[in-house]
Length: 117
Image 1: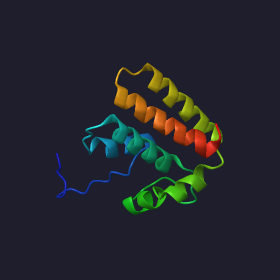
Image 2: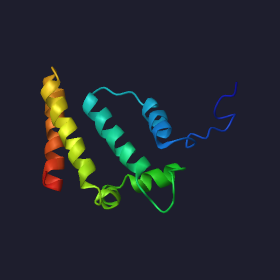
Image 3: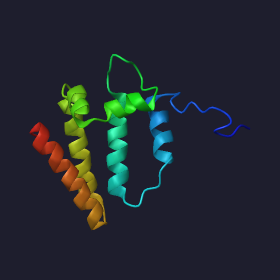
Image 4: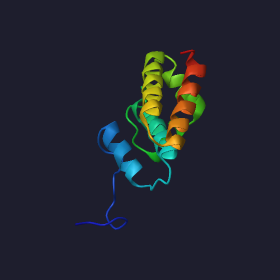
């Protein structure tokens, strides 16, 4: 068994879902809101259709996490935003934690305002 940093680790290998899960597992989360936002941004960046192909470096990922870049890459897919909005509204209605419901409603309202849902 090898250990980093003695053995190089290629954390960018695998599907976008595998890279997403690996990156999300590296951090601890104190609030569901921050976990959800980070997860959403990572998924959007890792699955965006780019000319560079799949994300294979932190430099490439950081470029894609720029809000203007993400908006430009996903502006052609408002239906995905609509599905996300509906999912967040349903989650807000079903949760028993007020702060989680408020966070879901705020995210849903942002999507609604941005895409006119």
